[in-house]
Image 1 (cartoon, helix red, strand yellow):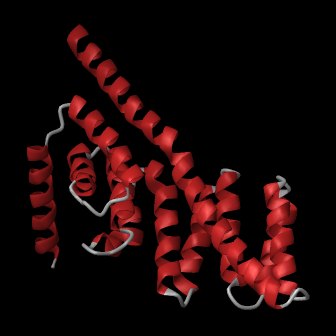
Image 2 (image 1 turned 90 degrees about the horizontal axis):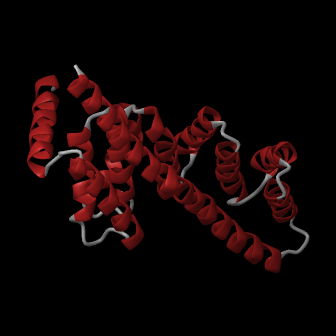
Length: 237
């Protein structure tokens, strides 16, 4: 009996180490999403500002960003809503992304995911649709629902897609949260073996793999899990 209790405590500690890794890196991932939006927004605002200093969309968007960055979330969200409703060019899309990021920063994850999903459903630009789906997937990893994550980034995992490594990381984290460690290993290993993976992402994944290996998860187990997944998919067709 004491051995079983010791094993359970040890397993909980290992799982907590993995969760701590994601809590350590998660804010940087989501922060990077915010940074991408801000950089794109800044470039667009500057170009538009140069061409027409009287452009109301540029002024409204910059003012909304200032409110959010100052921590005045309610005023900022209202201003972003106005840009989405009345703005021209790319500003409505940029405002939608920034609103979702602001909601996530406030801990309103469900609302942030819903906003990203709305972008993915209604945006005409394919890359923006995919980026919104990826951001939503990252917000969902702690929920331990791989299906919800896969529904958003499953199509991004194909070889050659520029977002494939990030999609695999998000799905791997979702599998880990769900307790499917072998499937998580498969996703992380795919990133580690991908020479095109961004360096910082590959480094994170290396830490995930080391943690899983310390829990006794091996590549052989992940291969068995992948084969079982393929069989289930074939049976459902």
